[in-house]
Length: 115
Length: 115
Image (cartoon, rainbow over all chains, first blue to last red; front, side, top):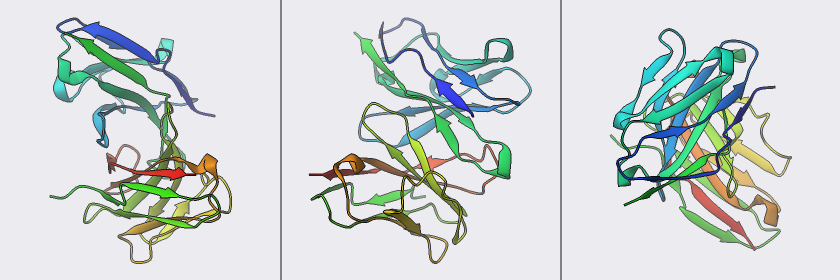
């Protein structure tokens, strides 16, 4: 069965510092991977996605993620964090069987940004 | 244009009561998904519709949960004989189609509290 693990429940970084949020997945074939962000009182917003091709994908708000098949990882990075990046971040894997778009989400990582 | 709209935003009900949660997807989106997000967890898939039919209801926890989408647009998630364990945020998402990777657009959710 597919699964997604986000090892860090909570991370605190200083504004301007770099950020890396970890995501590990379990999936038998080539996964379809996503990062979503959820700000308080708002719906989930797609940051970026990986299907195939270049393993480094760029997203919105200056985020990027790198797919590493050998490590079963899809870590999210940002070179310089802004206070407005404080939110909850979810990694997700998409099922490829049955041609559906349903997602399996990780537990989430809460990002706190210190001034 | 308008995003995914969910009503009500908050619902408090007593144990044993019946509730209905409504989702109004983005116009033209054929696929509609329901997820449930418990406190401190990532969203969990419940059911998805392609058009009017429930294409995959494998995530519904038991037969107290039911969802409809009679005209292929608005969907209603129905919960009978609510239990305290049903308390969660219920998220609705829509996408243009069900091809894997077709971006999901999430609503802000309905927070259900069963007392």
